[in-house]
Amino acid sequence: MKRHVALTLGLMAVLSLIVTACGGAATTAAPAALPYQGVTVNVLTFTGPQIAEPLQRHGPEFEKATGAHINVATVPFSDLYQKALTDFSTGTNSYDVIVFDPQWMGDYVAGGYLEDLTDRVKANKDLQWDDVGAFFRDFSATYQGKTYTIPLDGDFQMVYYRSDLIKTPPETWDDFIALAKEYQGKDLNGDSKPDYGTCIAMKRSAQSYWMVSSIASAFLQSQGTGQGGFFTTDNLQPLYGPNEGFGAALDVYKTLSTLGPPDQLNLDVGDTRGLFTSGRCALSIDWGDIGPLAVDPATSKVQDKVGAVILPGSKKVLDRASGKLVDCDAKTCPYATNGVNHAPFAAFGGWSGAINKNSKANVKDAAFAFLAYVSAPAQSNVDVTIGKTGFNPYRLSQFKSRDAWLKSGMSEKATADYLGAIEASLNSPNMVLDLRIPQNAYYQGTVLDTAIAQFLAGEIDKDATMKQISDGWNKKTDELGRDKQLAAYKATLGVTK
Image (cartoon, rainbow, N blue to C red; front, side):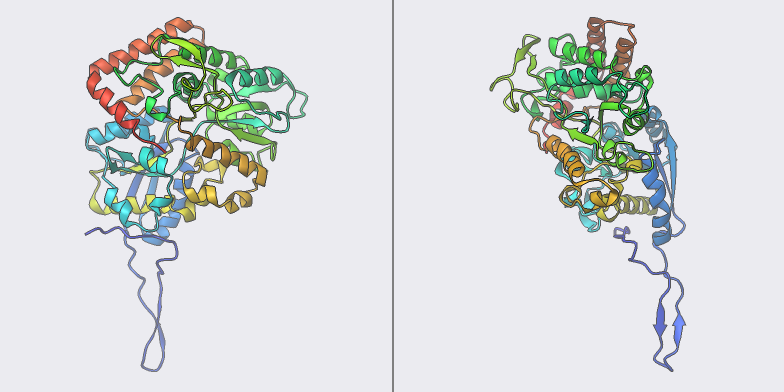
């Protein structure tokens, strides 16, 4: 019998008054037993404060209501995948919950390390599972038909721009470059110092490989989500290899590396967000975080000066048979808008919580109850409006009701732009799903990240970069089994909005 309980803060009272029939005297009953009194749940996530902050903030609330103590441990993002995998695979089991990149789910599921949550999510009414967007239920939470995670966040890359400066946001990457060139070196925040056309997180072992994919996707995928943006679907040949489409994306990325702060190659998203909200950047590529951060009066100088749009596209796309770029037309780009192929990139997929299958039963119950509590609309619909959480919209109610956004300080127009850019990405039939095949962390976080860092640093040229990525991906694919990896890749492309 399941021992987890549906939670709300007001569900449990620790004291109750009982009026006795004799004499009408009121007596105080003993405190009600809390369901997880004495249970400690150890949670692992990355060093924030983003993502860790709401877990740490909601932990004491949850403990007061249930008795369970929530202990949140953090490690740098570059260490998170291996830290959790090593802990689980060696049987150390120091952690009961991991809040992580759902792309990695396959490796943890295959090892037998994650608890199947399918029945739990169906039974928990407070979680309001149907309110979680279909994409996040299918991609961030589900693997091979079973639910293994609770989404806490929704992630799409999009473009932010200074709406007080830029009246027509970029449709193509050529437009983006032209605007970045126009504002590079100009004073954008009135402090008489030169500022930047664009601020993009290009730091190695941080965000760079997602950023280059946000650009490459427009050139590499044009036939819809099922076509895939990383490999061919016939023999799993890398699209991130020697071809004109990926070559064009590398050219764009290299150009943008020169149209920002002088230390842009060492900047993480926390750095670029701070630069943007301080008014120093005309453009940026990021997840949903800049929207809420821009309205914070304590830190932002760009309140009501920020627009958001779907990622720019391209008027030329890769012909996979020839490796050449071809013009967009009704056949090559059936989902194009104004002749532009947009391929919004679902980078990362959204931070999600999973439970260690080998934790004790009562700990797993408490862990699920905690994740359900954090994800429930009462908590998450506010958390997604607070920039410091790192949580971005992922529930239908977070798009339908704008009250929480307006209460946070975001204007009607800013709210419409922000949510509209995310919805345009979610609703695109040409959305590019992030890579979720076994050992995707090696493909992206090791091979791709290393080559891109070397390319930006001038250590290798464009042709060598494309060959190094393609060779590295093919080697790993052959090592793991091409047929097996192809089947896994095709299975993930069956996920639609």
